[in-house]
Length: 188
Image 1 (cartoon, rainbow, N blue to C red):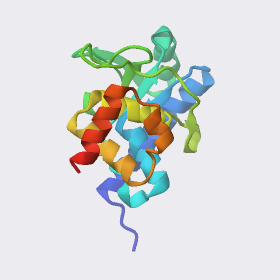
Image 2 (image 1 turned 180 degrees about the vertical axis):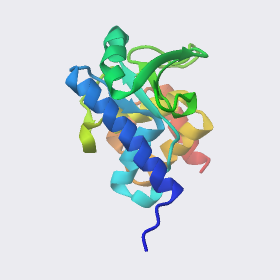
Image 3 (image 1 turned 45 degrees about the horizontal axis):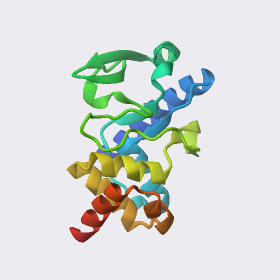
């Protein structure tokens, strides 16, 4: 008997949205990286599927200079641009809810002014199924340690638990972010 769970449905939905976005941006030759919890999910899932945690939305790093082109390129794929509560996002025209939107973050800019570091500039992408480009583990760890919210610390623990945070990744962290990683490891 086949049973499709809520979890499987949500994963399928996230991949469908990410796939449409990837197709739109690829055809328009616009660089981007999937970041945030969905990127953490994809990296962890590659190593240990049972350790991967679901997220509710998709965050994407883009260059602010490409925003107008992104708005136009994604429209035929069912996305509509919206700016609400200080957040730039692409919402699905069929289900325009902010919690299920694609949130846009800008490379080389801080997500919040109090953050120590900006969103990293594009390093080589990790290619995932359906042509989805995701952020490297090293850059994702930097972003998660910069945000340092509960969910970010959980994502760091998940990546660390499956061996994704290597000595090389750790060595690439700023001193402040190294302290944050040590704190997470000490409070497991």
